[in-house]
Amino acid sequence: MRLQYPSNIKIVSIPCTGKVDLIHLLSSFEKGADGVYVLGCLERECRYEKGNLRARKRVEQAQKILESIGIGGERVQMYNLSSSEAPRFVRFANEMTEKIKEMGPNPIKIAMQKKAA
Amino acid sequence: MIVAKQKPIEEIIEETKGYKKILIAGCNECVTVCEAGGKREVAVLASALRMYFMNQGKDVKIDEVTLERQCDHEYLEEIRNTIDQYDAVISLACGVGVQFLAEKYMQMPILPGVDTCFMGVTEERGVWTERCQGCGQCILARTGGICPVSRCAKRLLNGPCGGSTKGNCEINKDLVCGWQLIIDRLKELDRLEDYEKLAPIKDWSTERAGGPRKVIREDVQL
Ligand code: SF4
Ligand code: SF4
Image (cartoon, rainbow over all chains, first blue to last red; front, side, top):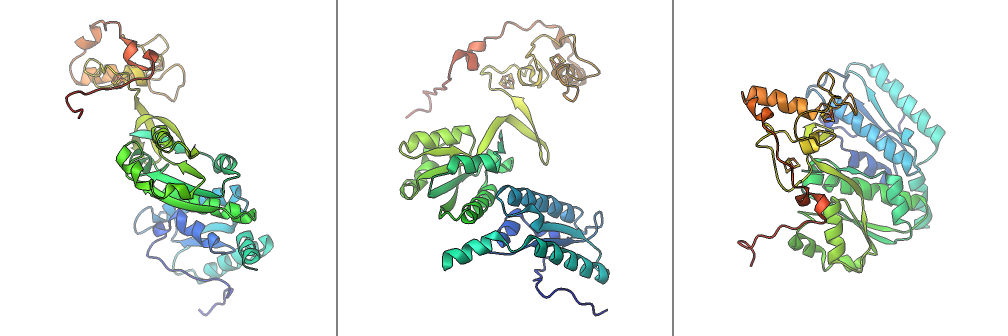
């Protein structure tokens, strides 16, 4: 199945979404990412039992922080799918890209560019 | 451990307004265990504040350090040569650490980054509950190892009040009655006769009622 997904998405692969820490999510925004989403296995199907549930909690923590500092909590999301669901992978990629396009660029990126100019 | 919880980021932002060089200081002990003020929380707060100020177009330098403890001179001394670079420190230690840091560095504004709550345990990940109020004269030997000072809402010392219902406290039905726990445990220990013994009047002067307290150990003093 050779499906297309938006080329603006940069994939960072990790052994389990449980490896994603809150600081990883925040650092991505500090470095200028417009949006970040964590794509985990289906809930209750984690090989390490709670990896994807931990990831979801951290995504929620990041949402709260980004919202309270004025960056926008919606810029970070958690999605779940199984590894055989390519069309769903594409759907999430498109959905996230649309959401971020609507929100516009990360204000940190703009502030950094202003500072550098 | 001493249990603390993170302050809302909005409050920290409000307190730090106007400072240009801020050090966030974590503590490796209790506040690390209760996930309020360890190295990870320092990194997260630093990142959040950097983004906030950047977004506001303000040039604020935010640095991070996590000390072994903030309640001992030797660890606080570790920042003696660097602290002057900053114009404020946010301490993520408990209130004890915040104050000791402030006492040591008189010229430096020291701001608390957590709300210090109580001495307690981790019941499960993300749930901490109170166990001791440091009354200065422990009576656990008589109460089946369960503390009526911290676990009975009224700090009763001779059995429950009349409000205990189905094992729960009358002030809040989600709170277990401390005396129910004591009686259950005494039963387990086959020492229910302890429950019949009248507790002597407790000397509350060793508790906070007697003013700020001090422990002096001449045998270890140098
Ligand atoms: S009796 Fe006093 S010292 Fe003992 S656990 Fe209770 S509060 Fe703490
Ligand atoms: S119900 Fe139990 S814990 Fe609550 S005040 Fe009465 S004796 Fe104390």
